[in-house]
Image (spheres, rainbow, N blue to C red):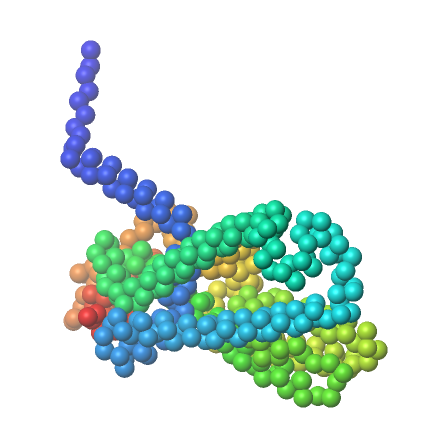
Length: 408
């Protein structure tokens, strides 16, 4: 009877199993908060170029990262405040219309449906009546329960926002050190380093470029729509500055984004023209300005210089559209990330896998060294073409313009 003896290195096996358990835990955390981490990564790439400029003027690394995130967040907070102020103003106008005598006469039949459950007229005359009425107590209890639920939702949202900003903050502050640590696991001139370097450059192009394009488009839209309201017409563009800024935000989705803003608005203006029997010329002028000035010109002139890089615009458009449909709200950021990963894998790694060529970093053959120079070794594998990537410093895992001074 033949006996087989297995030579197992048990200490090493235990450590491997323990490492797999830890990796599974990390994957579980990332899957549970995938939207939070994806948005934090987006904030990092959207802020990184601004952080480089701030870092040259602000010495402490932590302060520079905080200032960069603050400068990025201020315009978003101003836009949010402006939108909330307009919403409150419209709510006040709607409340005034409800208090109008004619409006109350129109909605009277609808109030009669509610009267048996809660005497509205008694509540108006005596607000304490809601506490003595059984139906009123039930409604008050449900309202308080719903309010507590909303408080929990808001608290969870603020916690996720904190994690997003913290992730972007530490990536800005410690990103170069993290990249240098990552290169210790492989030859920095190898395929893996080249692959992630290209992915990093493309993500920087996609996210920062689209943010810059959105800012330019929003500014152009706000100015163009505000100037349109100077024309003598029976009606105007409602909230032109806000409409232009929303068009800029929608431009994050290439080709179709801005149309989601100005096409419904054009339909609304056309409805006003049909009701008033005049103003069709203003509708045509609005459509022409929105399409030519706000949509086409920035997309043709600005986007090629600030967005996309080597990625196909059509593929990027589908990534922005299909991402939210497949993954939810964070898909608008996860979709382009997956596209970048797939495109560079197909471009750098897949050809060598299909041809069976070993994926190895290029090494210099001593027989090719003549008089201190290296003869041209001929075509190398795609992953090892750049022996020393442009702008890379010795021992650095990131491009030179991203390294910056050492952290404090």
